[in-house]
Image 1 (cartoon, rainbow, N blue to C red):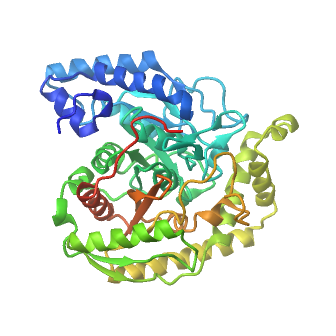
Image 2 (spheres, rainbow, N blue to C red; image 1 turned 90 degrees about the vertical axis):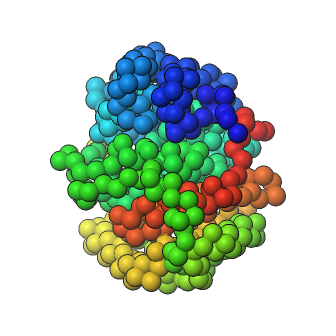
Length: 473
């Protein structure tokens, strides 16, 4: 079916329309801004919208397309940036009273690369304070709500990006993922998200999370994320942590392999990890997805990677990093009192950790990397649920009545692969009886992101799921 609504189009579709003169970047940015005006009041996905700047960038892109000199296939495709990422001209609020209130004088390198590809920046999307949890609410930003049911959580910490992707308020959405923060909201909101292998996207901002903290895209479809990665991946002399190989693949091309991208690949299928309970509707959807992957030609075998829960190690690394982040700001007592109590609590716990605690946690991380390397000697990818449950009530840190105390209790399948630095994606594979999306996760070998992109793209092409026409609730 040919789409005529620019606000519904993908990056690939927009680029083709620009090339044949059927649409302009100005019209596409206007359509995105109209969708933000229409939908965002119900879901609260944006912190700042910079309409005039986005339109100016769109006019420059329009001139390039008319001259036949676009900067890239995504020239003129509207994009958003997570509020934890520095964007010139926009205050870097970080979801917190500790964030900056003056417009940033510079872009982070990932934003610089997107601008070099010609993408107009619409604004910044919401995050919890300093991205501290797998949900998106903060004392200064309020609650970001799920477009499938606005009484439910969007997930986080890239919740604003995922909600914007689900409603196509812009097409390309930058997120970050330190323990699941791209994949959790992708699963809850029914969109695609990839945490690339650490190193592909240069890590150019100081962070106490070090190699845990990946940046990557959230989009409605898989190929758009491949186009995003083509624009931002590759070596950089500014990288503070990790390194990228010199040869960068064509990520978008991997998304276009079709069934050939699946046929013959060996997939280890795990219904759970280390015995974590999985909701029946999620389990049924993942079993169905495994059968579908086999029908597409993959060799699917049940296989448990065989590691114990690394939650304690992850939390030690996480809490120490957040304690360090707050100390860089040197907050006043009044500012500390204004923080999310959960965020303040973990930073206080982080301050009590010793260097020995940190080393022990990092040794657990090192051993986990070896375990997964051995797993991938047998399998091209691991397939498992992204989340063991679907989106729960908004405004709480754990599902009511669950007995859980940490947000990582309900997200046991995401953070292990931050610790290993592997590529991991989430793609929608169905809905629960309440109409809430279910995420299917693929995890690949280091720097073989093309494999998980190809798997997700083939699955999405064969078994496409709907996207929300408007916020529901």
